[in-house]
Image (cartoon, rainbow, N blue to C red; front, side, top):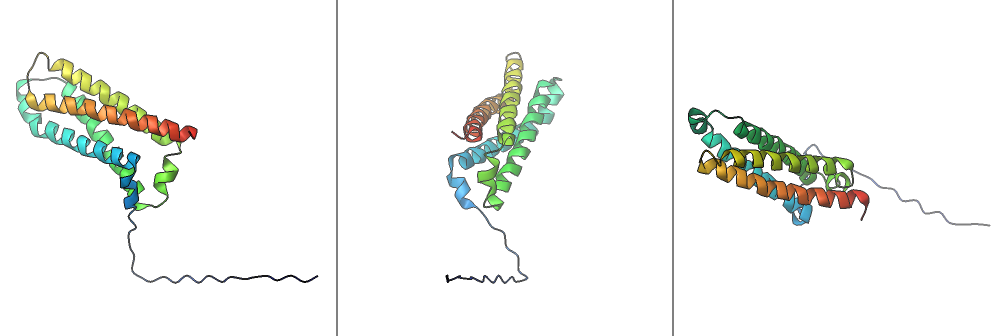
Length: 160
């Protein structure tokens, strides 16, 4: 009894130049677009709060703005790291979406941003400040985006 065996040799050569792989296809997916908008809105909220921080502190001494500032900054940085990981790796976007991490992250972000936005907007009923009102409303919009991301992460985690 004779049989044939095929052997394939693969040769890989490398050079000293390094390159960065960008997974631009991730930004064309719905989760990628959501993360990009979460990052942009988070940066807008942080920018508005930072710009108006001293003006507001001189006239009023309340902690609601600081809580919203901290939550917006925290989740802006976290979303930036997630987006960067998904953009610089060809497999990260598909793998991390199937883990519990993304579900927990987006759920916590949505809940805390919703809470901080509501607390800030409730405080602004007594004190009028247009910049902080805009930051509170953008925080609510961002909380909705994080809830959508949490829903998508739940579906992906469950394998639906």
